[in-house]
Image 1 (cartoon, rainbow, N blue to C red):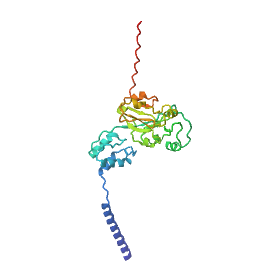
Image 2: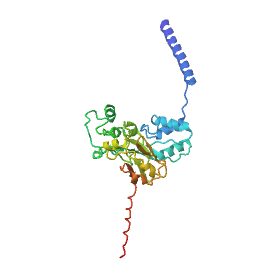
Image 3: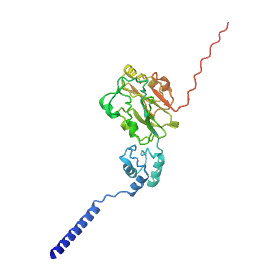
Image 4: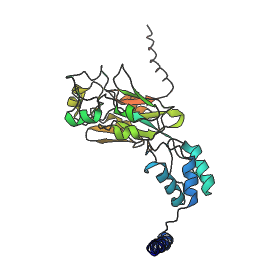
Length: 286
């Protein structure tokens, strides 16, 4: 009986000492978390798409609280209205952020970029890109396996069966950037949505020299530089035989669109151009 009693007392003493140690340790090494982080995380969409640039919604909530300012912080899924709610919780001013949208910078359709071989492997752009350059003569263009479609959580991108290229639904796109990361050819880019959704960009990423690029795709950028010369706002730069339009510099004048001999520069959501007036015929007096 004494043995059992001693054992019970010993175990009780050990448990009591352990509890005291754990209590002291929890107080000494406690990590304080601002309760506002949980409040912000609660109203986030929990898409965990990574479009905000942070690891998940909890990481974005933590960044909002610790930053002390909402400048440069945006949840692509929730948009500006969500940032305004976060600003209300944190007592911060939510400045207006420019909306962005994904654009596909490749016009290598079946008609513009004829196939030269057939890929008979796993239906994955990442795998196809690791194995070879693609089914056409252009090793820079879309591979057409739809990795961008697979990663989009919002149904904003699909493969167009007629062109063989991905098509973006502007209304559904949240600019989360998942499709940008998934594309091994880097043909998808996030650009400012623009006033009235009007945008101008070069629909090509081919860096080959003119004759080689045109042979691979009939609408490829040939690096002629005519668009650079006609732009009055220094919005177009030529690098590695490829023109690129800076959306922050572009004033949407559309002169470059008319000047491009390859029709590689795209203008979206603009009103139809007015037909040019034909010069009046000169009258000849007899």
